[in-house]
Length: 164
Length: 188
Image 1 (cartoon, one colour):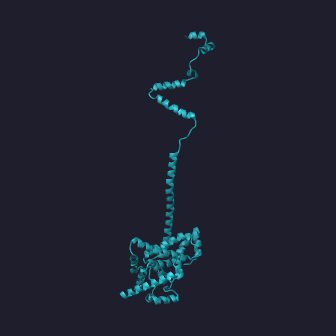
Image 2 (image 1 turned 30 degrees about the vertical axis):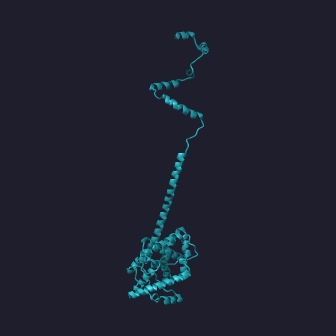
């Protein structure tokens, strides 16, 4: 059993004479009740209470802090997801004003489709031709005059005959 | 225990390094008197402990912004008063029973000598007090058991002095009737 609630004298009925007289007149049975404080306090109650209260306060503050962060994350995460989604779906492909880039795409697609159905040898031959291409090969047609000028300047008839 | 003034306690509390120490001092200084009121209000020691703990937890959160135009004890008492009434109202709501049934349940510990050492007439008195509506009960306890001035009770309850006098008068008459009736039924 712990200590009594009050170690001070009986508080009842106060120290106001007028109030005491009024109470005696109004409620004589109540006025006549005497006695010490009847409530007992559990053992060590007042020693433990401050520690229990402070532990609860700390616990509450920890929870509030954790809940505060969770609350912020709970709001921030969906907002970030929505913003990312909006950026992802509305982003445009890189724009270009270079006509060469546009036409090269347009020409490449039919060229690739042209290659379909060709044998491997045909492809290798086409690649070899492409590599050997020179300005002359690109346009082998010469006029008669150009041919005669060339022969006049460079060709030795005897050598040509010997080659034949 | 050395009593500290409100100013000293508040100065210590407002310093982050001594906050816990200050609050510990504050509790040790006021807990017994507050417990006396709360215990009479709810009667049950476990309920009294819950109410007192909530009182101090609320005080911890409110002390930072406490205005020094009233005494710390009156301020704490006001919180304890409100917490007691809230606790009793909550019990009525949660248990879906009348306030008389709640009072009867709370009076259960009066038969236990571990918790109550009063004689038969004191037990009758406490049972009669528990029959009062919560606000009347609070006023009766503050006036009859603690001999508080009406001005002080008015500051705690937020009720006018005239209304408090009327409330106390009604409560006293009710208790007198119940105590006398009980004595007539089973004289001790």
